[in-house]
Length: 196
Image (tube, rainbow, N blue to C red; front, top):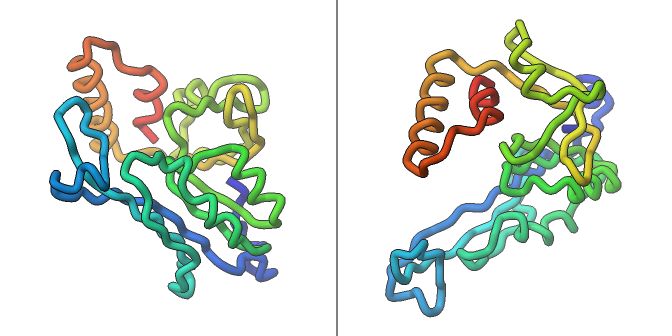
């Protein structure tokens, strides 16, 4: 992400901490015709999503909307970006991880940060994979410039904090169990990132 560095704070460059997330709410099945949700082959289900953006510093609501439960987070939140101001720090979760939107945020003279989805390839400036670097890392924190994405790449800063060994074991156990239940082998990328 573009860093909210101490120097930025001293210069008052961060004006708002623009925080956005989307959550799904299940509704009674009797609403399935009006508010359909993903049934996942188990019959009709109903639900809605609520998208909410606010300033973490003041609590001021920036945008809010009611969306269809079948909408992906990636397609939600476009209106929120029209409310950006220079100096905003945009915090969005992995469902909103869209490299083009990060570029748009930067063009508005704002900053962004996001968690890294597993399906996003990351390479170091020397061409090595993030996972190779993480396997060799000795400290508790990795902080380095990287390229995120494959077809479309974005220069950004990646900060990774080593997970507690117990959390790492639990994550890897769950990943292996999920893979086994589907007759697959666990993702090696996932197993490495589970340690961070």
